[in-house]
Amino acid sequence: MSAVFTSPSQIRAQFSRAMSDMYRAEVPQYGTLMALVSDVNAEVLASVGAAAAGAAGQESRIEVERHGAIRVGTPAELATIRRLFGVMGMVPVGYYDLSVAGVPVHSTAFRPKDTDGLAENPFRVFTSLLRLDLIQDATLRDAAAAVLATRSIFTPGCLALIERAEQQGGLAAEDAARFVAEALETFRWHGKSTVDADLYWKLRKTHPLIADIVCFPGPHINHLTPRTLDIDIVQTQMPARGISPKAVVEGPPTRRCPILLRQTSFLALSEPVTFRDGGEAGTHTARFGEIEQRGVALTAKGRKLYDELLNEVRKVITPAGDGSNADAYRQTLGDVFQAFPDDHQALRQQGLAYYRYAVGNAAADGGDVEALIAAGALVAEPITYEDFLPVSAAGIFQSNLGDENRDDLQASPNRAAFEQALGATVSDELALYAAAQQASLDTALKALGLA
Ligand code: OOG
Ligand code: NI
Image: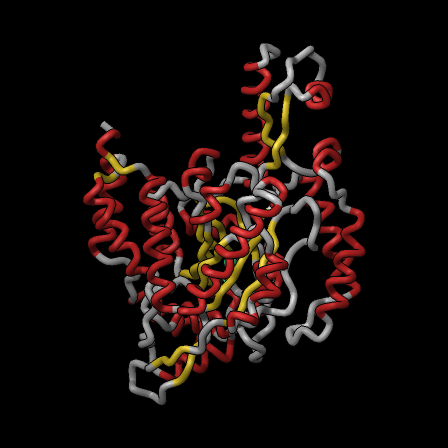
Protein backbone atom coordinates (compact mmCIF):
# COMPACT_ATOMS: atom_id res chain seq x y z
CA MET A 1 0.00 0.00 0.00
CA SER A 2 2.74 2.45 0.98
CA ALA A 3 4.24 2.03 -2.51
CA VAL A 4 1.74 4.56 -3.83
CA PHE A 5 2.99 7.21 -1.40
CA THR A 6 5.79 9.68 -1.95
CA SER A 7 8.34 8.85 0.76
CA PRO A 8 8.74 11.31 3.67
CA SER A 9 12.37 11.83 2.58
CA GLN A 10 11.24 12.84 -0.91
CA ILE A 11 8.69 15.26 0.52
CA ARG A 12 11.40 16.67 2.78
CA ALA A 13 13.76 17.13 -0.17
CA GLN A 14 11.03 18.87 -2.17
CA PHE A 15 10.15 21.09 0.75
CA SER A 16 13.78 22.00 1.47
CA ARG A 17 14.25 22.99 -2.18
CA ALA A 18 11.02 25.01 -2.24
CA MET A 19 11.98 26.80 0.98
CA SER A 20 15.42 27.59 -0.43
CA ASP A 21 13.93 29.00 -3.64
CA MET A 22 11.50 31.15 -1.67
CA TYR A 23 14.19 32.45 0.67
CA ARG A 24 16.56 33.21 -2.20
CA ALA A 25 13.85 35.31 -3.84
CA GLU A 26 13.15 37.13 -0.54
CA VAL A 27 16.76 37.55 0.65
CA PRO A 28 19.17 37.93 -2.29
CA GLN A 29 22.26 37.69 -0.05
CA TYR A 30 21.26 34.10 0.69
CA GLY A 31 21.75 33.34 -3.01
CA THR A 32 25.16 35.03 -2.95
CA LEU A 33 26.14 32.98 0.08
CA MET A 34 24.95 29.74 -1.52
CA ALA A 35 27.11 30.44 -4.55
CA LEU A 36 30.15 31.16 -2.36
CA VAL A 37 29.62 28.01 -0.27
CA SER A 38 29.20 25.91 -3.38
CA ASP A 39 32.46 27.30 -4.85
CA VAL A 40 34.40 26.68 -1.65
CA ASN A 41 32.96 23.17 -1.24
CA ALA A 42 33.99 22.31 -4.80
CA GLU A 43 37.53 23.55 -4.08
CA VAL A 44 37.75 21.53 -0.87
CA LEU A 45 36.45 18.38 -2.54
CA ALA A 46 38.99 18.80 -5.35
CA SER A 47 41.94 19.55 -3.06
CA VAL A 48 41.65 17.48 0.13
CA GLY A 49 38.44 15.49 -0.45
CA ALA A 50 35.33 14.97 1.65
CA ALA A 51 36.85 12.69 4.29
CA ALA A 52 39.53 15.19 5.30
CA ALA A 53 36.81 17.80 5.69
CA GLY A 54 34.84 15.60 8.06
CA ALA A 55 32.27 14.53 5.48
CA ALA A 56 33.32 11.08 4.29
CA GLY A 57 30.79 9.64 1.86
CA GLN A 58 28.58 12.72 2.06
CA GLU A 59 29.44 14.33 -1.28
CA SER A 60 25.89 14.23 -2.62
CA ARG A 61 24.25 15.27 0.63
CA ILE A 62 26.49 18.34 1.05
CA GLU A 63 25.09 19.98 -2.06
CA VAL A 64 21.55 20.12 -0.74
CA GLU A 65 22.29 20.30 2.97
CA ARG A 66 20.92 23.21 4.98
CA HIS A 67 19.07 24.04 8.17
CA GLY A 68 16.47 26.69 8.82
CA ALA A 69 15.07 28.35 11.93
CA ILE A 70 11.62 29.47 13.00
CA ARG A 71 10.04 30.82 16.18
CA VAL A 72 6.46 30.01 17.13
CA GLY A 73 4.23 31.78 19.64
CA THR A 74 1.99 29.21 21.31
CA PRO A 75 1.92 25.57 22.40
CA ALA A 76 -0.84 24.88 19.87
CA GLU A 77 1.31 26.24 17.04
CA LEU A 78 4.23 24.09 18.16
CA ALA A 79 2.06 20.97 18.33
CA THR A 80 0.80 21.48 14.77
CA ILE A 81 4.31 22.30 13.52
CA ARG A 82 5.36 18.92 14.91
CA ARG A 83 2.65 17.20 12.86
CA LEU A 84 3.58 19.24 9.76
CA PHE A 85 7.24 18.23 9.97
CA GLY A 86 6.18 14.68 10.79
CA VAL A 87 4.72 14.37 7.29
CA MET A 88 8.28 14.92 6.00
CA GLY A 89 9.93 12.44 8.37
CA MET A 90 11.27 15.14 10.68
CA VAL A 91 10.97 14.51 14.42
CA PRO A 92 11.94 16.60 17.46
CA VAL A 93 15.48 15.85 18.64
CA GLY A 94 17.09 17.58 21.63
CA TYR A 95 15.96 20.29 24.05
CA TYR A 96 17.69 23.67 24.09
CA ASP A 97 17.06 26.21 26.84
CA LEU A 98 17.98 29.68 25.62
CA SER A 99 16.79 31.56 28.72
CA VAL A 100 20.26 30.98 30.19
CA ALA A 101 21.51 33.35 27.51
CA GLY A 102 18.80 35.97 27.99
CA VAL A 103 16.64 34.78 25.09
CA PRO A 104 13.00 34.07 26.10
CA VAL A 105 12.54 30.84 24.14
CA HIS A 106 13.19 27.14 24.40
CA SER A 107 13.76 24.99 21.37
CA THR A 108 14.17 21.67 19.63
CA ALA A 109 15.40 20.63 16.19
CA PHE A 110 13.09 18.79 13.80
CA ARG A 111 15.18 16.44 11.71
CA PRO A 112 15.27 12.92 10.27
CA LYS A 113 16.60 10.70 13.02
CA ASP A 114 17.79 7.55 11.30
CA THR A 115 20.95 7.10 9.26
CA ASP A 116 19.10 6.43 5.99
CA GLY A 117 16.83 9.46 6.34
CA LEU A 118 19.83 11.70 7.05
CA ALA A 119 21.63 10.36 4.00
CA GLU A 120 18.56 10.88 1.80
CA ASN A 121 18.13 14.48 2.87
CA PRO A 122 19.37 15.95 6.16
CA PHE A 123 17.14 19.07 6.22
CA ARG A 124 16.53 20.32 9.78
CA VAL A 125 14.62 23.18 11.33
CA PHE A 126 15.66 24.74 14.66
CA THR A 127 12.28 25.55 16.19
CA SER A 128 11.81 27.85 19.16
CA LEU A 129 8.75 28.41 21.32
CA LEU A 130 8.21 31.83 22.88
CA ARG A 131 8.06 31.82 26.66
CA LEU A 132 5.50 34.45 27.56
CA ASP A 133 5.94 33.35 31.18
CA LEU A 134 9.30 35.12 31.10
CA ILE A 135 7.77 38.53 30.28
CA GLN A 136 7.44 40.35 33.57
CA ASP A 137 5.02 43.10 32.55
CA ALA A 138 1.59 41.44 32.96
CA THR A 139 -0.26 43.92 30.72
CA LEU A 140 2.17 43.37 27.90
CA ARG A 141 2.14 39.61 28.43
CA ASP A 142 -1.66 39.56 28.16
CA ALA A 143 -1.64 41.77 25.07
CA ALA A 144 0.87 39.46 23.38
CA ALA A 145 -1.13 36.38 24.32
CA ALA A 146 -4.32 37.97 22.96
CA VAL A 147 -2.67 38.68 19.59
CA LEU A 148 -1.30 35.15 19.33
CA ALA A 149 -4.66 33.64 20.26
CA THR A 150 -6.34 35.10 17.19
CA ARG A 151 -3.88 34.12 14.50
CA SER A 152 -3.88 30.98 12.44
CA ILE A 153 -0.48 30.21 10.93
CA PHE A 154 -1.50 27.25 8.75
CA THR A 155 -3.56 27.32 5.57
CA PRO A 156 -6.75 25.20 5.67
CA GLY A 157 -5.30 23.16 2.81
CA CYS A 158 -2.16 22.43 4.80
CA LEU A 159 -4.15 21.30 7.85
CA ALA A 160 -6.33 19.02 5.70
CA LEU A 161 -3.29 17.40 4.09
CA ILE A 162 -1.56 16.85 7.45
CA GLU A 163 -4.69 15.04 8.57
CA ARG A 164 -4.86 13.00 5.41
CA ALA A 165 -1.18 12.01 5.72
CA GLU A 166 -1.75 10.90 9.29
CA GLN A 167 -4.87 8.92 8.44
CA GLN A 168 -3.51 7.24 5.31
CA GLY A 169 0.02 6.83 6.57
CA GLY A 170 1.43 8.96 3.75
CA LEU A 171 0.67 11.18 0.76
CA ALA A 172 0.41 10.31 -2.93
CA ALA A 173 2.55 12.37 -5.34
CA GLU A 174 -0.09 14.96 -6.18
CA ASP A 175 -1.03 15.51 -2.54
CA ALA A 176 2.63 15.69 -1.59
CA ALA A 177 3.25 18.46 -4.11
CA ARG A 178 0.21 20.38 -2.84
CA PHE A 179 1.32 19.84 0.75
CA VAL A 180 4.75 21.34 0.00
CA ALA A 181 3.15 24.42 -1.57
CA GLU A 182 0.63 24.87 1.25
CA ALA A 183 3.17 24.27 4.03
CA LEU A 184 5.51 26.83 2.51
CA GLU A 185 2.93 29.57 3.18
CA THR A 186 3.43 29.21 6.93
CA PHE A 187 7.06 30.30 6.59
CA ARG A 188 6.67 33.23 4.20
CA TRP A 189 7.66 36.77 5.20
CA HIS A 190 4.89 39.37 5.51
CA GLY A 191 5.86 43.03 5.76
CA LYS A 192 2.49 43.97 7.21
CA SER A 193 2.35 43.61 10.97
CA THR A 194 -0.85 42.25 12.52
CA VAL A 195 -0.68 44.76 15.40
CA ASP A 196 -0.76 48.52 15.91
CA ALA A 197 2.51 50.44 15.87
CA ASP A 198 2.27 51.21 19.57
CA LEU A 199 2.14 47.57 20.65
CA TYR A 200 4.94 46.64 18.23
CA TRP A 201 7.29 49.22 19.74
CA LYS A 202 6.38 48.27 23.31
CA LEU A 203 7.09 44.60 22.66
CA ARG A 204 10.23 45.40 20.77
CA LYS A 205 11.53 47.41 23.71
CA THR A 206 10.88 44.51 26.05
CA HIS A 207 12.74 42.15 23.74
CA PRO A 208 13.11 42.42 19.94
CA LEU A 209 12.52 38.69 19.65
CA ILE A 210 9.09 38.98 21.24
CA ALA A 211 8.05 41.56 18.66
CA ASP A 212 9.36 39.30 15.92
CA ILE A 213 7.30 36.35 17.11
CA VAL A 214 4.09 38.11 18.13
CA CYS A 215 3.55 40.91 15.60
CA PHE A 216 3.49 39.06 12.28
CA PRO A 217 1.05 36.66 10.64
CA GLY A 218 3.28 33.63 11.05
CA PRO A 219 6.70 32.13 11.88
CA HIS A 220 8.63 33.48 8.88
CA ILE A 221 11.78 31.50 8.22
CA ASN A 222 14.52 33.68 9.72
CA HIS A 223 17.54 32.04 8.13
CA LEU A 224 18.56 29.12 5.97
CA THR A 225 22.05 27.81 6.49
CA PRO A 226 24.09 25.97 3.88
CA ARG A 227 26.75 23.55 5.13
CA THR A 228 30.31 24.28 4.11
CA LEU A 229 33.34 22.02 4.18
CA ASP A 230 35.61 24.89 5.27
CA ILE A 231 34.02 27.66 7.29
CA ASP A 232 37.28 29.61 7.68
CA ILE A 233 37.63 30.05 3.92
CA VAL A 234 33.99 31.10 3.53
CA GLN A 235 34.31 33.53 6.45
CA THR A 236 37.33 35.25 4.87
CA GLN A 237 35.79 35.35 1.40
CA MET A 238 32.43 36.77 2.46
CA PRO A 239 33.48 40.47 2.38
CA ALA A 240 34.66 40.16 -1.24
CA ARG A 241 31.08 39.19 -2.12
CA GLY A 242 29.61 42.11 -0.24
CA ILE A 243 28.66 40.25 2.94
CA SER A 244 30.06 41.14 6.38
CA PRO A 245 30.04 38.21 8.79
CA LYS A 246 29.86 38.45 12.58
CA ALA A 247 33.31 38.82 14.07
CA VAL A 248 33.94 35.34 15.40
CA VAL A 249 32.95 31.84 14.39
CA GLU A 250 30.86 30.16 17.12
CA GLY A 251 31.83 26.76 18.47
CA PRO A 252 35.16 24.92 18.52
CA PRO A 253 38.32 26.36 16.93
CA THR A 254 39.80 25.35 13.57
CA ARG A 255 41.08 21.78 13.94
CA ARG A 256 42.49 18.96 11.83
CA CYS A 257 39.58 16.75 12.92
CA PRO A 258 36.43 18.89 13.02
CA ILE A 259 34.16 18.27 16.01
CA LEU A 260 30.51 19.22 16.60
CA LEU A 261 29.49 22.37 14.78
CA ARG A 262 31.02 25.70 13.81
CA GLN A 263 28.77 28.55 12.72
CA THR A 264 28.93 32.15 11.65
CA SER A 265 26.19 34.54 10.58
CA PHE A 266 25.60 37.95 9.05
CA LEU A 267 22.87 40.48 9.53
CA ALA A 268 20.88 40.36 6.33
CA LEU A 269 18.04 42.76 6.17
CA SER A 270 16.36 45.71 7.71
CA GLU A 271 12.90 45.29 6.26
CA PRO A 272 10.17 47.86 5.91
CA VAL A 273 7.09 47.11 8.01
CA THR A 274 3.68 48.70 8.10
CA PHE A 275 1.20 48.47 10.95
CA ARG A 276 -2.44 47.52 11.28
CA ASP A 277 -3.49 50.99 12.37
CA GLY A 278 -1.44 52.70 9.69
CA GLY A 279 0.90 53.99 12.44
CA GLU A 280 4.23 55.33 11.24
CA ALA A 281 6.02 52.67 9.19
CA GLY A 282 9.33 51.32 10.51
CA THR A 283 11.94 48.69 9.86
CA HIS A 284 12.28 45.27 11.41
CA THR A 285 15.43 43.17 11.49
CA ALA A 286 14.77 39.49 11.80
CA ARG A 287 16.18 37.68 8.85
CA PHE A 288 19.81 36.85 8.43
CA GLY A 289 22.28 34.51 6.81
CA GLU A 290 24.36 31.78 8.40
CA ILE A 291 26.81 29.08 7.40
CA GLU A 292 27.82 25.96 9.29
CA GLN A 293 30.54 23.35 9.23
CA ARG A 294 29.83 20.01 10.84
CA GLY A 295 32.26 17.62 12.47
CA VAL A 296 32.17 14.39 14.45
CA ALA A 297 29.48 13.88 17.11
CA LEU A 298 30.86 13.80 20.65
CA THR A 299 29.96 11.31 23.37
CA ALA A 300 28.75 12.58 26.76
CA LYS A 301 32.39 12.47 27.88
CA GLY A 302 33.57 14.43 24.83
CA ARG A 303 30.76 16.94 25.20
CA LYS A 304 31.63 17.48 28.85
CA LEU A 305 35.22 18.25 27.87
CA TYR A 306 34.00 20.60 25.12
CA ASP A 307 31.71 22.47 27.53
CA GLU A 308 34.45 22.73 30.17
CA LEU A 309 36.99 24.10 27.71
CA LEU A 310 34.50 26.58 26.23
CA ASN A 311 33.65 27.76 29.75
CA GLU A 312 37.33 28.20 30.48
CA VAL A 313 37.70 30.31 27.33
CA ARG A 314 34.69 32.48 28.19
CA LYS A 315 36.02 33.09 31.70
CA VAL A 316 39.08 34.69 30.12
CA ILE A 317 37.42 36.43 27.18
CA THR A 318 33.90 36.89 25.77
CA PRO A 319 33.69 37.87 22.12
CA ALA A 320 32.61 41.52 21.85
CA GLY A 321 29.74 42.29 19.49
CA ASP A 322 31.84 44.85 17.59
CA GLY A 323 34.65 42.39 16.89
CA SER A 324 37.26 44.45 18.76
CA ASN A 325 38.72 41.40 20.56
CA ALA A 326 38.15 38.83 17.81
CA ASP A 327 41.85 38.00 17.35
CA ALA A 328 42.43 37.60 21.07
CA TYR A 329 39.33 35.40 21.33
CA ARG A 330 40.50 33.14 18.50
CA GLN A 331 43.93 32.89 20.12
CA THR A 332 42.53 31.93 23.52
CA LEU A 333 40.08 29.46 21.97
CA GLY A 334 42.89 27.76 20.08
CA ASP A 335 45.18 27.66 23.14
CA VAL A 336 42.58 26.25 25.53
CA PHE A 337 41.39 23.63 23.03
CA GLN A 338 44.93 22.20 22.80
CA ALA A 339 43.59 20.01 25.58
CA PHE A 340 41.10 18.37 23.19
CA PRO A 341 42.75 15.48 21.26
CA ASP A 342 42.89 16.22 17.54
CA ASP A 343 43.24 12.87 15.85
CA HIS A 344 40.50 10.36 15.23
CA GLN A 345 42.27 7.42 16.77
CA ALA A 346 42.66 9.26 20.07
CA LEU A 347 39.10 10.58 19.96
CA ARG A 348 37.79 7.09 19.41
CA GLN A 349 40.05 5.23 21.82
CA GLN A 350 39.37 7.74 24.59
CA GLY A 351 35.62 7.47 24.04
CA LEU A 352 35.26 11.16 23.16
CA ALA A 353 33.47 10.81 19.81
CA TYR A 354 31.17 8.45 17.88
CA TYR A 355 32.25 6.33 14.90
CA ARG A 356 30.55 4.21 12.29
CA TYR A 357 32.21 0.84 11.77
CA ALA A 358 32.48 -0.98 8.47
CA VAL A 359 34.32 -4.00 7.09
CA GLY A 360 37.83 -3.15 5.83
CA ASN A 361 39.89 -4.72 3.07
CA ALA A 362 42.08 -6.99 5.16
CA ALA A 363 41.10 -10.45 6.41
CA ALA A 364 40.05 -10.75 10.04
CA ASP A 365 42.16 -12.85 12.39
CA GLY A 366 39.88 -12.24 15.35
CA GLY A 367 40.81 -10.18 18.36
CA ASP A 368 39.07 -7.16 19.80
CA VAL A 369 37.86 -4.08 17.95
CA GLU A 370 41.21 -2.30 18.32
CA ALA A 371 43.09 -5.31 16.95
CA LEU A 372 40.67 -5.58 14.01
CA ILE A 373 41.14 -1.89 13.21
CA ALA A 374 44.92 -2.13 13.50
CA ALA A 375 44.84 -5.10 11.10
CA GLY A 376 42.63 -3.22 8.61
CA ALA A 377 39.76 -5.71 8.94
CA LEU A 378 37.54 -3.04 10.42
CA VAL A 379 37.44 0.69 9.62
CA ALA A 380 35.91 3.52 11.65
CA GLU A 381 34.49 6.70 10.08
CA PRO A 382 33.38 9.68 12.16
CA ILE A 383 29.60 10.02 12.69
CA THR A 384 28.54 13.55 11.77
CA TYR A 385 27.03 15.76 14.47
CA GLU A 386 23.47 16.48 13.26
CA ASP A 387 22.33 18.79 16.07
CA PHE A 388 22.92 22.25 17.51
CA LEU A 389 24.80 23.89 20.40
CA PRO A 390 22.98 26.12 22.90
CA VAL A 391 25.87 28.54 23.54
CA SER A 392 26.41 28.95 19.79
CA ALA A 393 22.67 29.33 19.17
CA ALA A 394 22.55 32.07 21.79
CA GLY A 395 25.47 33.80 20.04
CA ILE A 396 23.59 33.58 16.74
CA PHE A 397 20.40 34.95 18.30
CA GLN A 398 22.28 37.81 19.99
CA SER A 399 24.28 38.85 16.97
CA ASN A 400 21.06 39.31 15.06
CA LEU A 401 18.98 41.12 17.64
CA GLY A 402 21.02 44.29 17.73
CA ASP A 403 22.16 45.97 20.92
CA GLU A 404 18.78 47.37 21.90
CA ASN A 405 17.95 47.42 25.59
CA ARG A 406 16.00 44.49 26.88
CA ASP A 407 14.78 43.19 30.20
CA ASP A 408 16.95 40.70 32.05
CA LEU A 409 15.77 37.13 32.14
CA GLN A 410 15.73 34.46 34.77
CA ALA A 411 17.38 31.26 33.53
CA SER A 412 14.76 28.56 33.84
CA PRO A 413 14.93 25.46 31.66
CA ASN A 414 11.57 23.69 31.50
CA ARG A 415 11.77 20.67 29.30
CA ALA A 416 8.57 19.19 30.70
CA ALA A 417 6.55 22.27 29.72
CA PHE A 418 8.15 22.23 26.27
CA GLU A 419 7.29 18.57 25.72
CA GLN A 420 3.78 19.14 26.95
CA ALA A 421 3.34 21.96 24.41
CA LEU A 422 4.88 19.80 21.71
CA GLY A 423 2.58 16.89 22.53
CA ALA A 424 5.54 14.52 22.39
CA THR A 425 8.87 13.86 24.02
CA VAL A 426 12.05 14.96 22.27
CA SER A 427 14.58 12.29 21.34
CA ASP A 428 17.91 12.23 23.14
CA GLU A 429 20.51 12.98 20.49
CA LEU A 430 23.32 11.13 22.27
CA ALA A 431 21.24 7.96 22.40
CA LEU A 432 20.74 8.20 18.62
CA TYR A 433 24.49 8.45 17.94
CA ALA A 434 25.26 5.64 20.37
CA ALA A 435 22.67 3.40 18.71
CA ALA A 436 24.01 4.19 15.21
CA GLN A 437 27.55 3.36 16.35
CA GLN A 438 26.49 0.10 17.99
CA ALA A 439 24.36 -1.00 15.02
CA SER A 440 27.25 -0.41 12.61
CA LEU A 441 29.61 -2.39 14.81
CA ASP A 442 27.16 -5.29 15.15
CA THR A 443 26.64 -5.42 11.39
CA ALA A 444 30.36 -5.26 10.61
CA LEU A 445 31.30 -7.95 13.15
CA LYS A 446 28.56 -10.20 11.82
CA ALA A 447 29.84 -9.73 8.26
CA LEU A 448 33.31 -10.73 9.51
CA GLY A 449 31.83 -13.84 11.10
CA LEU A 450 32.78 -12.58 14.55
CA ALA A 451 29.39 -11.76 16.02
C1 OOG B 1 17.66 30.34 15.93
C2 OOG B 1 19.10 30.49 16.29
C3 OOG B 1 19.77 29.14 16.47
C4 OOG B 1 21.53 27.88 15.16
O1 OOG B 1 21.98 27.57 14.04
O2 OOG B 1 22.13 27.65 16.21
C5 OOG B 1 20.23 28.55 15.18
C6 OOG B 1 16.93 31.63 15.72
O3 OOG B 1 17.55 32.70 15.63
O4 OOG B 1 15.70 31.55 15.63
O5 OOG B 1 19.62 28.58 14.17
NI1 NI C 1 20.97 28.47 12.49
